[in-house]
Image (cartoon, rainbow, N blue to C red; front, side):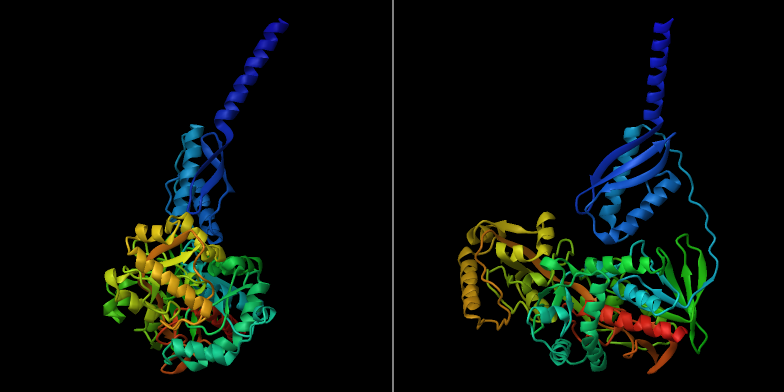
Length: 565
């Protein structure tokens, strides 16, 4: 009897264990994301996903909100076939595949559920910020820290906008970082470089405001957790004033991460996947904004002030061609959300626009996939050669000049070439290498062969450039910054060509970031960032976008807050 009881209890324990394994267990699986494998743990009980935890991933910080929204929707609907997050497609696909594999491993039969119906009601606040990129996050934090209640609406499921893809750095003069490295700079020289880069068509008042506030914004951003401790130089700058993270890592994701965490920690009400449709304007002052919720329902956010920080229109081919027909068919470096809604909103209330036909192309964009190679690669020593293996331009001239020179070459493109020392000097190059963008040669001869360009000419070009570096004088193209010789094997290259990069034109503002109509401020309406015009004139210098969006974002947030009191 005892033996029978033991056998019975043992069998019962096995059945119980078997049941728990089949219907209540954590399943671990992984799939490839954008930067590597995404590993997840999925809790499944009684054919239902109870929880999803990301155990390991190497994705950019700005994708975190997107991953959370996907996880929430999978659990809510019990379905892995949910929409990807725009701007984080590879991350979305990898996460969903990892969860799907875990579900298949479990053998569970999920019962798909409809999404919950949410009813949105009209709400009120002090300040509404439209757009969650670098300018919008900065404005939201500044307004909140100034004592206002702030709602930030962002049409995407992730924060950051184009700022997520900013790589080169942030220009600023007379900063604590420059001082610590013994670099002498001045506001006047920064203004002169910017005006010269913009063909002296810039609004000088805005340029001076930006330059004078640049040192303060560097300290402010570093206080928020941004790393701007490394210095370099981008095209059009006469002094090392391009601030970037340690090792020359991309600046945008670093700043977005710091600002996003700050905004959430101090209580900014962030509404993602929320589209700002129109401004509420009574002819005297702005009273709020009509938005469209994630489910498509419209509702009103009544406010005392609105800040527009929706970015440029570089990803809107119709608006691009409308203003510059010659750019028809050009690719773009912009994220998909840069479609110019902010400009359309203010046109509806008769706001002033400026420089709408000033659209910049970036000269180092991979033609096959529109991936931008940061200007810092050239700043750290890379050179451009054509299909004859020859240099043809000062690589650090302004973007419009370098773009035009490339289009004049055979194939309307060029090769950006550099050595191992340049690669080691800039973390951003590692990501290009890992993603397979670079052509490699263990010698200059091998690189020339792999690029199908004349070996002798490429060797002559390297030799002539290295001599210029040693003499600190580029007699051929007058390049001023010659940081290092190119002689450390292996050697690298990537084909590049111009693509639409930055829209210098947009909403006309004054130094207080007030939006103008017939030259006069529209009460309660402010704007900052690429949605505005005037700062950069006919051409933007690399590194000036980051200082533009943060300086004027902070001014806009503070002034909108003051207006709302």
